[in-house]
Length: 177
Image (cartoon, rainbow, N blue to C red; front, side):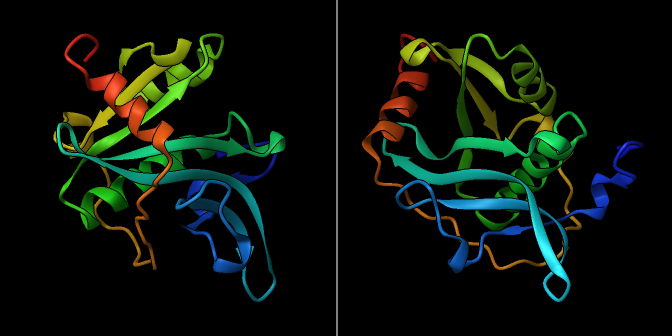
């Protein structure tokens, strides 16, 4: 998708995991980044997706997406969709034991909800007054994820945040999911 105002196509951005010097916001999490430029000339981070792995014996292994952030000047230009698509593709290819990904969205965020739905996230319920969405790696949307991605150094850290596990249980308990 091309943005005329910035003169770029999202495929021109580089997508990678955060460097150790860039740090994580959430305990035991990682950030997947969209960056403009290169290491030699300098990079500008234009977007990030914070994520961590949650495992529950009842529901399996899931990636909790704690936040998707895009700098103001880059919003509504396809950056969030491109980052999420690539992150989901890397996880599906690298960790076949992971069932899917889940996230929470505020009720007033209609544009964001429509983006997640377009990518294949399905509404699962309303834990803690948020809209809960899940993306399964055995879905038709996941079958269409790119498989010809460049190699990157990527880890899938387990998050020990009890809130993330509670959200997973709320989304997939027999009464909600």
